[in-house]
Length: 636
Image (cartoon, rainbow, N blue to C red):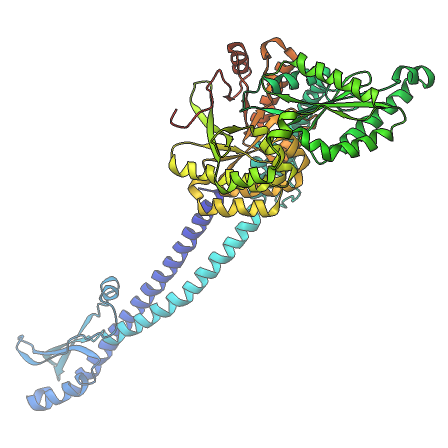
């Protein structure tokens, strides 16, 4: 129970006690007053009636005596009048039952009125000849007591309610800084170190708030220092400082991962660019001018691929640059090639460019040899971008619109699932992997399908179909949690977000077993739009996962803004993890930062026992790869 609730309870109890004590005290005082009035009333009547009877008691005229007694008794204000001779013989007995109408019995039982019986002696001269006893009727007194109690209850009740409301508002105002401190404590746990701006007037609370702010500032410095140091070490190990691209080591690791991926015919495009005459430029104008050309070329390359945020850029050595475009076919270069040729011609020196298509299962040496061959073609053609022909692609898929429409209309989408397990081999969740088949039920290349869908603006339609199929799987399998990797361009679209939230609202129980995955490159590219998505997912109960984390050399700060539930480390950091101290340091630091914001870290592409053991030593939370389990149906 919160402090505010406890104080409210105490305030309610105190005011209630005051209310009840005031009510009961007033009733009891009125009760005593009415009993005194009844006593005085009966005593006055006894005295008056005794004097009247003294004049006629010696005549022994019973009729006259009764008439005199009745004249008093018939007023209705007396419960009983009893006249006895001195020897105890009754002369006149009159009794009237106490009648109380409209007053609850419980009230009479709680506050009884006991009017005393007053007695007087009647004399005949100097001789006492009779005694008389009179008791007042409490009926009217009960009515007056009830009316007084009702009025007191109403007036005290109004004061009671007003006091409660006033006390509630005062407590809200006084304890508002405590609410801010509670929110700040939760924010600090999520690595949000912004200060509390509202300082309370109460000295004790102000001191606590100021201490909170100092603590938050110190924690922010520590967190920033760790993040900056980790980023710096990662950049030194994997990034070219001049251009901000990945270095040769990063390129070779990324390409090897793409070729060894084992994700249903993983494929893409790799490009190589060579700036000609760099050595001569360096000798003639100095290294600063040469660096300016290299930075200018890197910016032109990035601008040319701005519509493809999944692309990764690298500077290999000297004047060589490379780009890797996962899930991309040669056909998409038809859109890029003219713009790229135009951009490269604007460079101050010639730039040769070449693209080849890679396929899962190829060797790195084979792909690099094809690139070298295509670079030679580019040089021979006046540094025009050279693209290796892909006869299989050209002859097998001539109508991508028809292929994808057929997939959507006939639901030719098959789902398989690969588990992510913890160190105890307990399944955390299953990643959903998509497979496509044609009319003859023959498998299609997944990378080709997604690449073509992107080229003909069908990515969102494809993502919707996959999303609905995953929800249907969750309905059929009530014990599992599934993740689904969706395109960043789809997730950033307001209409697609509305579609997701609408479906999750209808299936609230399913939302808690759903994880939405988005790649790091997409998360950075669509960061502003994805913040709205994250807010909606948190509200519905669904989780967010950042896939292929580490492929972009960006600050860790965006993790704080998105606060994902999971971070999946790009497999290029996991490949031969036990042999690379830099990768181990990066992963260890990332685990510390992620755990600080209650985010779990997943290592994917675990293929060897050594990789698994090293990842476990670095306190990674989950593990995925062929060593852990192969993709398959949920039944397996």
